[in-house]
Length: 119
Image: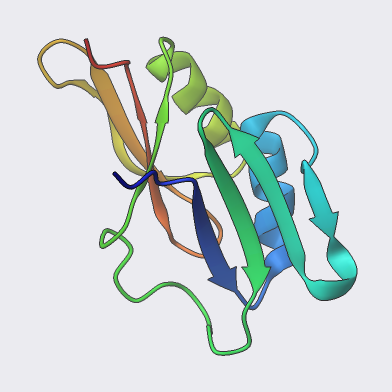
């Protein structure tokens, strides 16, 4: 059985993404190696890493291809908070039948969703 233990986001602007996700996750990076362009957070059962990657340039070309999903009971409140932090609104919170979901984008254009826990 496989266990997904981490997700890495490659970028040419790791400091910008790290500062953004530090605000989104409301804590400093659990791992910080700014000298080598790496920051990472334990977010629930998954580790989120931001990595300086010289082959990435500009905004993501297919922002919806891979999406991060952050689970929260307060989708609307977290949406408003992250929007105020500079998250780009892709889809306002809506009821998906049994819970709310909303989609935003980070400074590189990567999509991420806020969603109620799935029963």
